[in-house]
Amino acid sequence: MPGAHPQVLVAEDDEALRKMIGHFLTDVGVEVHMAADGLTALEWLKAQERPPDLLVTDLMMPRMDGLALVRAVKADPKLARTPVIMLTAKDRPADVVTGINAGARHYLTKPFKKDELIAKVKKVLRID
Image 1 (cartoon, rainbow, N blue to C red):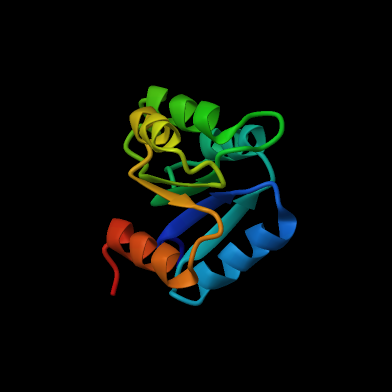
Image 2: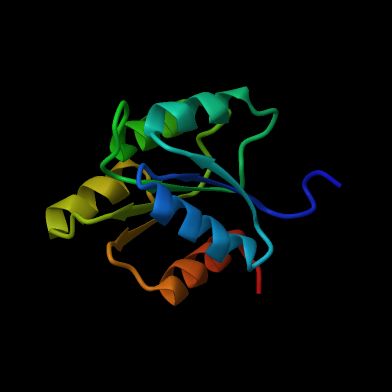
């Protein structure tokens, strides 16, 4: 039945990491969709009848980076309420502020711990 599980879009250019995140989230009962860059993610988002329950995005990606993706999502009335978790190797306080100001609810620096990502996803999706 469609919509039975929360839907999450993972936008990450590193294929191995994208697959790993997908496995983590599938294991907690989430339906995972994947995109290899921000532009592909935005095109997928705009093509959906309803937005996903969560967007997990890398910051540094080709074609459209995570900041531009989050800003485009937040500027679109249909997508604006989509919560965002941003993943990045950029860990300076100014980078965190930039990500949060763009619209990310949570900002995780790489390498991140599996349990930390799952806890944040569960918190955003309100699942046990």
